[in-house]
Amino acid sequence: MRTLESPISQQQRGLVFKHHPQKIVALGDSIVYGFGDPAGGGWVERLRRSWMLPDSPGHVLYNLGVRGDGVQQITQRLDGEFRHRGELRNRVPDLIILSVGVNDSARLGRPTGRNFTDFELFQTEISNLLDQAKQLCPVLFVGMVPIDEAKMPFLDCFYYSQSEQVRYKEVTRLACAERQIHYLDVFQHWLDRGEDWWRSRLCEDGLHPNVAGYQSLLEDVLNWPAMAQWAGQPLATA
Image (tube, rainbow, N blue to C red; front, side, top):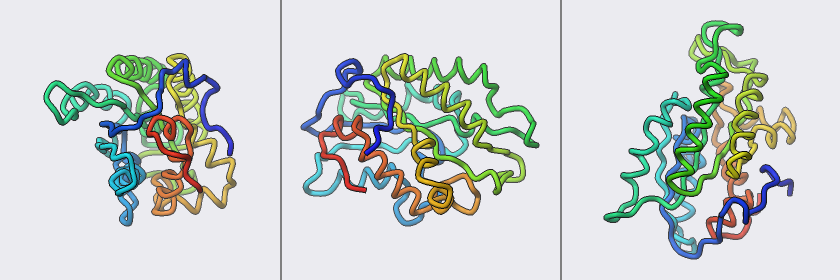
């Protein structure tokens, strides 16, 4: 299976194989939240449920996705969310999963309008977010899914495009590589599977995954060597 991350060794990034239950927080936007998946609640919820099965490692996963959030909102709530999810006194989570950027890439009002988050500001903010997160604990970053431009605008206001997605996801991927943070390039992986494939996994709004899309996203995460190695589980079968 194709490796979906930057070519940086596991040893360099400090990830280790886990054999006991860990506390994990997933921060992001509506795709972390799971909007569009009435059957399974999204990929994070599906992963949380899989870790509750009798033969699972029993990791505890908190879904901290908020619809509409961009990089600035995630940065603002990062420390507070992290400090209050350790469960036990004087404990904090063992891993942060981040997934953000698609909302920042949207253009407002028209296809040539300003970005929700100015690109140069996004470069600064994503660097700040990654720096802050890495100071707290190990970090994994799950990239964005491709959107369907034919379905835009979203909510009659937000014009998402794949060209803007590429700009924002590439600066994120490179920022992760510079900090030795694993980045899962979901956008490219889905495009590589073909247009019919990825379009069939989006809701009618062209922005959020549908039930099949979230299941595919879960399989991508489970088949990601960084996650499999960290969680102490064998690679899933797609």
